Amino acid sequence: MSHCSRHPEKKSTGTCRVCQKTYCPECTGSSIGICPGCVYKGLIILLIVMIVVSYSAWFGIF
Ligand SMILES: [Zn+2]
Ligand SMILES: [Zn+2]
Image (spheres, rainbow, N blue to C red):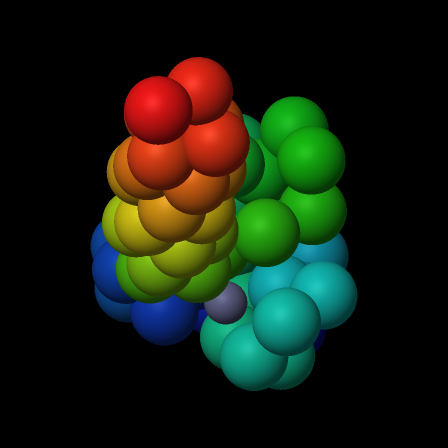
């Protein structure tokens, strides 16, 4: 039996698809099979991608 990497007292329900860390139902992103750390990393990457896309769209107009 393994435990959640974020909540040591909780039993893990799966492992992260990105970094293989264990997570429990209380962890953010557990419903999509990703640990909280990777959810935040994904959000930051998404934000950067959105900024880059909006900038290129902005300069494409002018
Ligand atoms: Zn992860
Ligand atoms: Zn947890």
